[in-house]
Amino acid sequence: MKKIVIGVITIGMFLGLAACGSSTTQGESQTAASTAAQTEASTEDTPTNIEVTDSNGKVTVPYQPEKVVVFDNSAIDTMNVLGVGDRVVGAATSNLPAYLSAFETVESAGGIKEPDLEKINQLQPDLIIISGRQRDYQDELAAIAPTIFLSVDNDDTWTSIESNIQTLAEIFGKEEEAQRQMADLQSQIDTLHASAEESGLTALIVMVNEGNLSAFGPGSRYSILYDTFGFIPVDDTLEASTHGESISYEFLLEKNPDLIFVVDRTQAIGDEESQSAFISNEIVQETTAGQNAHIIELDAAVWYLAGSGIESIERMLADVQPAVE
Image (cartoon, rainbow, N blue to C red; front, side, top):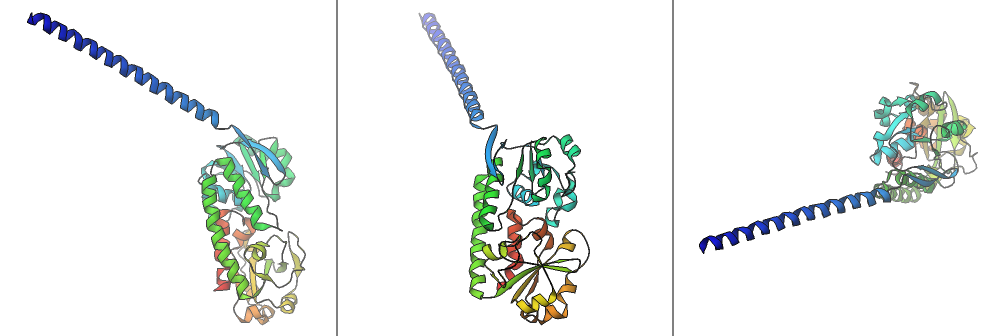
């Protein structure tokens, strides 16, 4: 009798274990199937291409491109801050500002005004980003890969810069980080703007180019100083051109700004010439800015070669901060 009972118990245990094993296997299969389905759904939810708006209008580009040739230093800057700088495979490496020197090791895609089309074709980029300096080549570049052009509206500087940053963030799926960065910049801008307006000081930004002088007012390539940072232009009638309005030293004395901001183009493009010759000029020293030591040398490479990336805006804010301290 005992043998029969033991036999029944043993058979029951075996059947129970078998059922458990079957249940476990079935559960594992269901879990694997569920995971696979989720992965497939996630893949389906991730677009291959997206439509964004650049300075020319709507354009379709790859989503999260892996290989990007970038001629716009501000775009390299923003990509780097957003954590996708490693996607840059080619750039105008001989015209990078010092703060982007880490990108000198990527492939040279040609000069800042003359892209190397053959080299770019060899790089097989997923996306090409250009600035105004390469617009003459846009059609040829677009034949190689989708190409976007990001410009700054000199009549609405900060809004257009925000739009460009958001466009890059959309392309690389970095919207949250971009929003965080822009909120921080907005806070700094608001503080500076309030201080600049409260100071009541008039300002002028001057470019030095191998001894020649150009002045920039509202609506110019450096209008960010006025419409975004809040400085009061000493002359709002200056020609709003890319290269500014040619002026003389006597013009500075006539307008007599409280603040003079200086960009040395010669220095920005690699010449060793210093701005000291401008600052020590006798006429410049006669101005109110000269007499009060309110002549501020700006980081020429940042202002001339970049100027609308996340990090470059922060550097520019730091550059002009001494004017309101």
